[in-house]
Amino acid sequence: AQKVTQAQTEISVVEKEDVTLDCVYETRDTTYYLFWYKQPPSGELVFLIRRNSFDEQNEISGRYSWNFQKSTSSFNFTITASQVVDSAVYFCALSEAQSNFGNEKLTFGTGTRLTIIP
Amino acid sequence: DGGITQSPKYLFRKEGQNVTLSCEQNLNHDAMYWYRQDPGQGLRLIYYSQIVNDFQKGDIAEGYSVSREKKESFPLTVTSAQKNPTAFYLCASSIGRVRDQPQHFGDGTRLSIL
Image 1 (cartoon, each protein chain N blue to C red):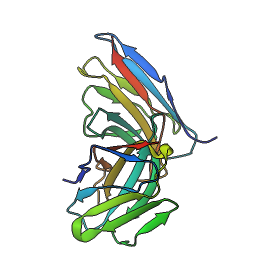
Image 2: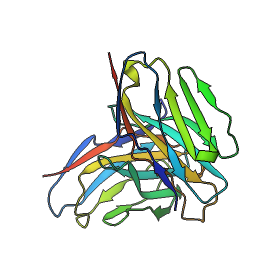
Image 3: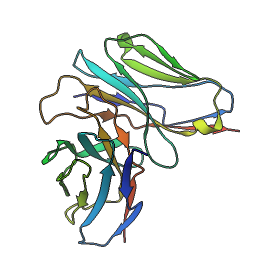
Image 4: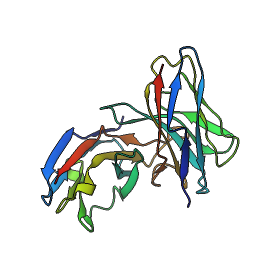
């Protein structure tokens, strides 16, 4: 069974500091997809990034960057120069590419609540 | 604007009562999903539907029912058999199969017991 672990339940940093959110996953499949979502106080989940298991290149999008390492089964998310608007709960999720019909799903981690202190 | 609309935002249920949560999308997505979110437990899949008139149970389907009569709509009924329904419910949709397509989420419905 697949599993996603976000060991950091809550993190608080002062504005403009860098912060890294950890995500460790378990899967028996060789082909899979990893996702990060942001959940602001309003409640909806906002899609941030998707990465497939064959693409280990790190990705940068503005202040956001992601580090995917298959060797350690990790897909960590770093926010550089954090801002108050980054305060939210962040979820990492995993889906397996090989799914029997009727077994399509994302497995979510328990989330990390990030608070940016002004 | 295209998106997913969930209603109501807040819902209260009495003991023994069935309640229905609405989810409508105008993104022309084939797949739709219902999740339950409890504090500290992340999101758990209740039901999902890949096409109209078809749906599959997720990890925690007991006490819930769904229908998919139209592509745009995927209502969730919380039945009296669900003994602990207090939670935040999120509806999502995606273009295709979940394994490689990001899901788009609604704003959620918070259900409480009176």
